[in-house]
Length: 109
Length: 113
Image (cartoon, rainbow over all chains, first blue to last red):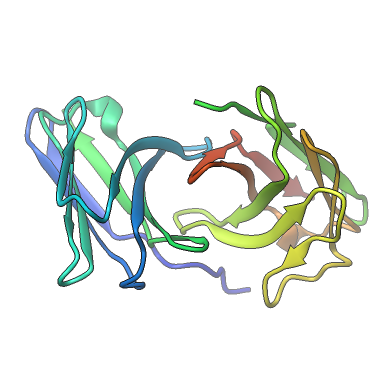
């Protein structure tokens, strides 16, 4: 039978380059956003979060940007490493949590 | 962060048998847990919301008699795939919410022969 679920877009980058992963969210009232990383065969792991009263937040090698005008979220990974290869999901939270489609990041050595 | 333990990580079973997957919150109490299904190279699909002490809430299209959820304590939710068939083969993931964040189990790969 046909498998269900959104098909994941892919992003391939060279080791050492910066990666930008984008996400469009749906609820303009969402006030909290999270990026998750999911490695093959594992559950998603929390990476970084941002509240709607901010437009940028930085972590270690990762930066999340929030553009509420166009309901867009991005995750920037600096100096991408092979260990960053995974699927990345954004999540928006208001009364419940909704996941974006996810992006598969592949890092080429 | 909070730890969610999911067991087993991998299970192979014969068609027609039932399989139970456990999801435990190790260092916190979870009144609500969530169960997801994920097909290869696809996104997470919410199956149901498990509520401690009450019936689970299932998403549209998910058979409640097929996927039995029990949340008998504040630290344990179980998903039982009843009379499993090959089309039930998938990656199942649980999660629990702590304040606003979701913490996920490590997932269970179910293969039905």
